[in-house]
Amino acid sequence: MQRLQELARFYPTLKHLVVGLLILVAAWIAAKIFVRLLDLIFGRLAARTQSDLDDYLIAALRRPVTFLVLVAGAYVGFHTAGIQNRYLDGLLFSAGVMASVVALISSNRAFLRWSRERMGDREQALFSVEFLPLIEKVGFLLVLVIGLMVILNYFRI
Image (cartoon, rainbow, N blue to C red; front, top):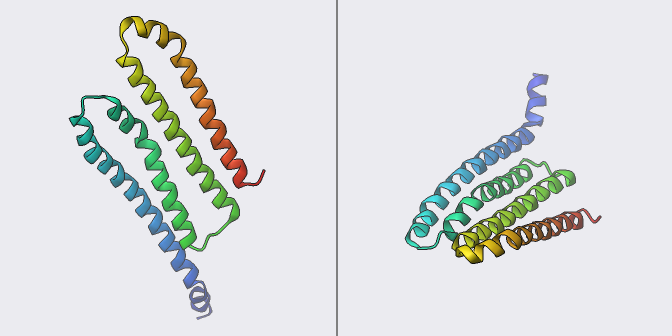
């Protein structure tokens, strides 16, 4: 009887944990569905265009967007479960920022790949060899530094 009373006392917490876990599972399923919809809807739209840029962007953004949906679901799941920890929020925020940074870097690389393929032989020889790697590295560093500044600002460092 005493064991049953202890279990009843923790029932709301247990209920919140189960709901939080269900939200995490739903977020994972939603991320998978979102990627399928991204492929289905935007893939069809991209197939209609003459440019390959949209195909490259869809391929580059598939994983980061999936991870962002999963991080958002984890945030909602943890807060629904009553797990509101400053460090956990910081970890989820940092994961979301890093997924955004990866999305921007991947988009930059997809755009540069598309640019490289559009150039002629003479243009490509000079520009592709000398400037595109520089643009890629500068863009990478710029996005990475901005992402790091956002994370450090969140933690007030």
